[in-house]
Image 1 (tube, rainbow, N blue to C red):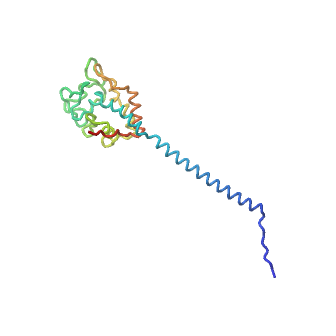
Image 2: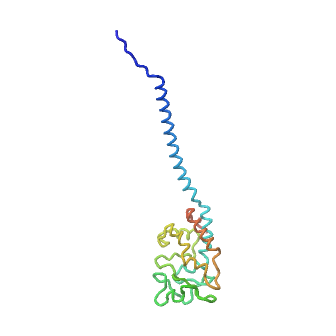
Image 3: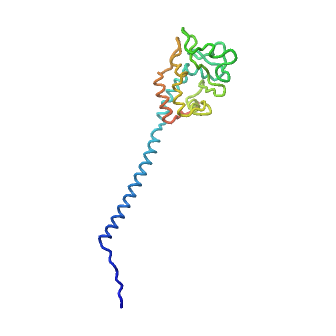
Length: 215
């Protein structure tokens, strides 16, 4: 009668195999943990960068500037620009025109030269003086904070500007002219530096609109 002979695996080999399995398992768990952590950090960063409270608070500062005569006078509800600290209709009744630069012989640049005209209450100047064009009026006059914030980030109403272009627009030469309006005119309620800070905070924190007002 023949007996089957079983070859015994050396104990040290079994231990090595077990140890190797444990190491592979631990390595897989560690790699999985690193991947998960990276993912969570990215999401956490993006979420943390948006802050509706801070964004809305910044916009309310922006709103005070946009509704000041230095900004609103060139963003009227109608096609006649406004003038003066009381934002009355412009003398001589110039019209917006298709390109925002006037109509026929009554062009904005006829009176608004590249620089401010010397003297009290004389026409302020800028090389590109104009109103928004007829197909993109960008009305500020009469807008609530909610309405204006929504309009400013709507590409169909803001001149097709994306976030980057909106940030850059705060440094546009015609925007800057609001802080150099000529003799006899009040300045916006905050410095241009502070305005840019509030403008950037509003946009970078999510460009949230204040809640609609209720009657």
